[in-house]
Length: 263
Image (cartoon, rainbow, N blue to C red):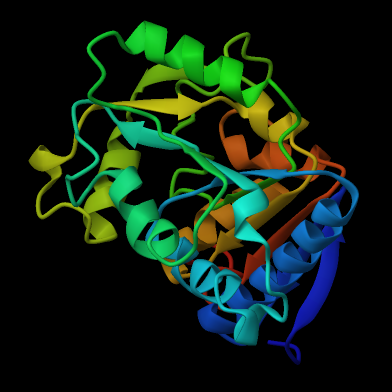
């Protein structure tokens, strides 16, 4: 491996490879915090969508700590969304992404507004429609995301991803690789316990956001990263669409940048 950090681009996507997952997370947080500071210097609020997965741990830890990010953000002027959650789980469930976001972000900073995706809603269609309205009231300034082992962004797995989806929020069936990842990440003890359906923001939300910061550490993501960067842009690897975004940066560690295993 060449000396690190290493910087290059694929199509329009900037890529950074850092010494380890912590340094990759911290680098992403420094850039995101500086960007949000600049946004708040020119408008009354910043609207941010957060991913909820172990890949985001170091990033979020640095983003909420000015000693690590270099910026003391005015969180009371930041409007927070999240990008997906399981159907049927309440916010109190340890596996709920609302629970993750509370533990890693919301209990540490006081945000201006938080808009949760209620996976236990009695009328899911109405919940999706209402969330879509909130998302589109004003532009999304920043989305902080990862890439799944199957190349998904949010819960847009290859079988359901649509780069031109007419919906902004929808219910999806989770594919087997996605569900197994939840076990691999330690979120569920067994495959059978992973929900089969979820609600997710769709790909156009990511395409239309002003800026994307993409945290993807770990060897289990190496094949997906390789596909996202090297394969044709298609829903076979939904993350490949990131290469067309005008302002997106992918943060890797040596394990996720290593490419697929041979033999």
